Length: 299
Picture 1 (spheres, rainbow, N blue to C red):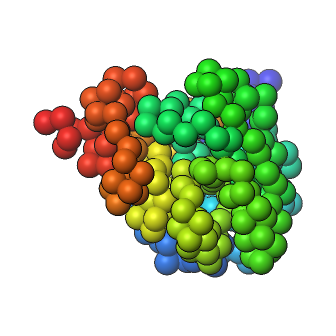
Picture 2: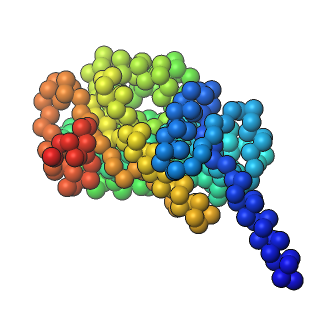
């Protein structure tokens, strides 16, 4: 009996020692290589690049770090029951896409919680016309949570599901601007691809409406403000999740990075005559840092 117990322990040890950590980014192997190097540095262990044709070769004890929604979906749909750490994915699109592998996955969300964004919006946006949040039809929004957050700040926030086709989406957005002076976006890979993002910014500017965006890039392109996290912050949080999994063989709940930043579009701030809260107020009240980062801004 003792001999059998030792053999079983040996098999368990061998299986654990051969677990591999991969990075998988659908169609962008160069990005996978860069991410793999970053994770090798933060984890202190080897991280391999995974190609799509290799997904079927992944073992159940392996861990796949996916970048983006498409990569996450592909990894979830493989026959292997490998564990998945999802990066560069929004909270709502993760929740709407993770049913097939929720028990074996964790995500570090991009963007910021809706309640936090609404709270910051309330500090400078005085127009009480209805705000409309747009999202693709494949995403489900927790409307109860949204209503509670909006009422807390005496705001009226509606949601509109938009077809992912570019022309149909722009027609819907045009209709939305008839009743809303400010539109909110979420991290939504299906709707907010590069082309629609440009078209939406152009349309909102033409209609003299504001877009409260989900990324730094959209603010630089013409949105009024966003709360976001840096790639370094997301990798740091993902590293925490992975190290915990390696020691406990279980995932902590999915989360946003510890450090979120807020950015405003100075041109639109002047155009609307907005009075912004101070960096210190935003940090002490909401825990967000300015674009430069808290250490740099408050040093």
